[in-house]
Length: 291
Image (cartoon, rainbow, N blue to C red; front, side, top):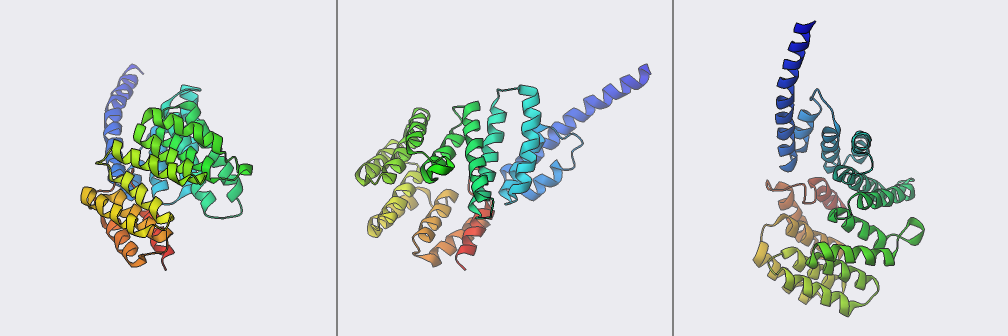
């Protein structure tokens, strides 16, 4: 019996480093947006803990399988809650992605859209409750509050408070969200002023110019929008967010659709995408909308 325990302990010491290295390989593949390959490794692991469940879920989300993503996020959340109780950044991250997955399901327009939208809001609120500095959750929750009708929990005053919190964490980002709020109130002068402040705060960040170009397009100021696009292109030609964002602006405005298709084709073929960029699945969905 003593020998059996020694052998078991020895095997355990071998398994853990191998497991850790294998998980790292799966995480690296996820970060390279090789989601199918990452899933293949993860689902073959002998130990399925909260960390593994969370990464499986994120891969599924990026592939557009939101039901499977929710299934594994709930498993991750259950284990994290049992270990950490009512605290922890990992729990906040689980709720963030649960909110995102329910949000995508709500956008699909199925009969459960209202329920999914409410579930999305509740999850995002919990993500912020668990970690008030979770800027991704704050940004997603802001978008919900400002877009959703009141009966689903939309609230401009709550969106305003979120924008204040974001500004504390990131001054330029805070002004982007002030701009969105001002535009929603139809205070277009303030909306443009906040966008200008964001650009001046981080002049090398082409995303802020992209936000300005999108705003000018919505205001049908197409010549000015084109100029801003040209400025952004000079700063970040080939930047994935810029390619996707520019295509999205064209599609939303029903203009330059041939160029939008070309940009999305380039985007999908890029080998430098990360999970922080829109997924290839989202890009393909945009392409389908052009058919």
